[in-house]
Length: 213
Image (cartoon, rainbow, N blue to C red; front, side, top):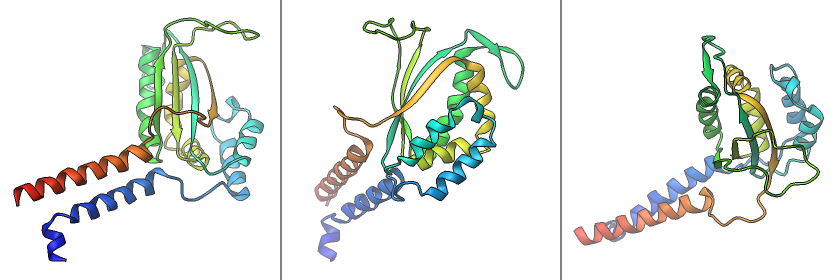
């Protein structure tokens, strides 16, 4: 045992512990929503301040089809030029109001194992489209990764998050969102590259310990 310690193999134990901690936070280990959870979430959502802006039938169908896996929410956003700040009443550019919303949203999303998967600004109109309404002037496209549908609902009904929605509604002239599952990925997700990063760090650390011994 002393020999293994002197050879620096203990760093792999640290890497393994770090990996287990990360995956324990990043991956949904609780499985799909239960019928009881769905009814509780929808009941609390209906009494919230934002339910009138959403189709509860669509939301219920999405929750009932839960497979326990992560998903990406596609968001298209068009901001207003300016609007009154919900707190101060001062006329404020739409992007600044949106930043005030996202600063709160991102912290809450990250706490539940979520994060932006991609965010982009539109640089042109529809290049290929038919049987669709005209482009209203979308400005932002984003994919947000949710650890699970349970985490999404916990975030939505959290009363501490409700005040931030005022900035969202003030900032956005138009928006729509729908959930997706990736079919093709050309990049590694954090569930892959973070453990690899820990392993790389352990390897480099062990080499450094052996060289300095």
